[in-house]
Image (cartoon, rainbow, N blue to C red; front, side, top):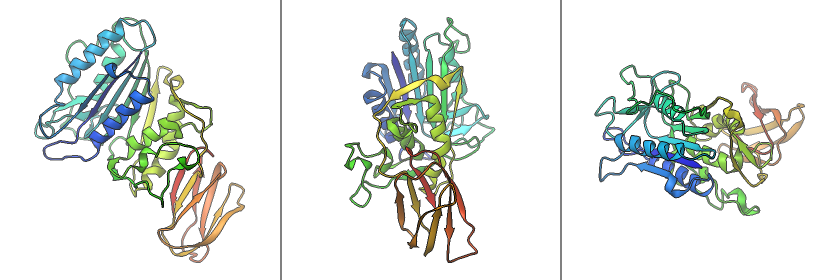
Length: 349
């Protein structure tokens, strides 16, 4: 049985966000429609301007109810825990998740590490999947509150496999970005495949990581074309492709994913095997003549370009590639890696 706690907070008094609630709702929708979580097993907490919800106690109560229900269930149990909002890097392993009254109440945060410990100690789950879309800048004043009760005492003999995904590296920022709208000039890849528009083609301001995550779970992370997305496949896809995804929006952000207790083996979901119409997008930032060289230093493409021009390449081979400016010899060539024919890489030159 699959269970989920999903939290999204925009309405911070002094530092409001724009896309955290939309991200949480989008991830909750993926869980219900494709992640195998029944509506009654999904608890969604989002902020609004009318009240002071997402303050803490209601989260603990919901988790405790899920723990009790799952503990009595003898089948394989999975818990999703998702948070989108402000975050603070307490330590490398611990992110404080800022709740509704932060920063007016400076430590109105929960400890991501302590809540993870609660989930693994609960004696209720065989798999725990955690996703944090928030900043991780270090602040010595923030500690993050622990769950209520005996969260640090193990119950039973379940030792769950764990996947932990962070939207950014420890000590770094996580960004909201304005997504490109779907239009005739920027069509979705489903024109011939009946696929839905990608989450990262929304016309709203959203978290760069969550939109990438949902697209990954919808099929982008299936780099081998097996129709299965495991925790290991998602880890590799995040490591290999998220940084270039963020660079598409002119942001420097590098997400991470880690597993514990054999978490690489978690089969997150199955997806249709669909090859994209193109697997590399290059945005040019100069007026010049450019050559793209392939893994064997063969010329793959050459032409005149202008600043802002976008080149979409179908079936670019796996391996190292190099972009060279043929007119301005002071510009060093740019080398990049295309990791898979199945996934899209984004480059700027």
